[in-house]
Length: 264
Image 1 (cartoon, rainbow, N blue to C red):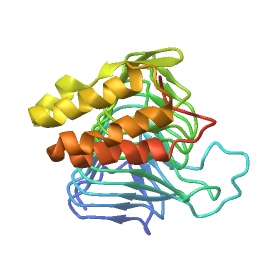
Image 2: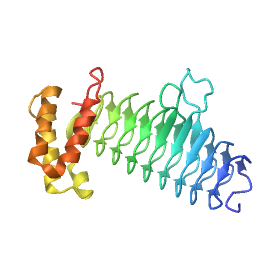
Image 3: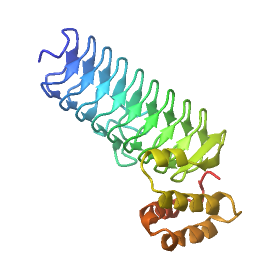
């Protein structure tokens, strides 16, 4: 495999496609699998039961697949699974899952992950996300598709971020961030909906109007969460084209725990 630098230490049991490139002084453990077209930079450590898909670009100085920072972990064969076409910049740390959850930390496809990002055990990251520098996710955080996290965003354990949501720089999340919502602050507070992002992704005027209706119900009419949910349900008849968007919001709100609540 000519793509592996002579100073790299790749365990003989590791499964790397013949097209994978590995930079100098990188260490790859026995339970690692890497798909076609993926490049791995210098001085990386990839260990544990880690599966990496195709056409990923992993820059230098990353630690992927290390055991969770969880004192209860006792050596169970938990996993890290990374999809296809992700960019992972320098000094990121992605841990494997833990037996207290699904046992898998998962990253989807086409994500743009900048330097110094930390994904703790059992995080579930969707696809097409952008994590700016120093984004820090505690354990069990779920991030939907198309989420954008500003630099130095910090997310408390078990928090969920809905699809198309966005945080400002230095946001601190202790509560769930519903789909489409933009937030800012420490702790984070809702500021608006991600209308410009939705337009860039091809949302029609009718779908955007429905998102505006959801924003009004959640944040502009001084309603309880139950009342806002009832108001959002009515949007399906007003904006038939936006029914999947409304249903996504309703499902997200239904799964929100009373103890954690949502960013308001």
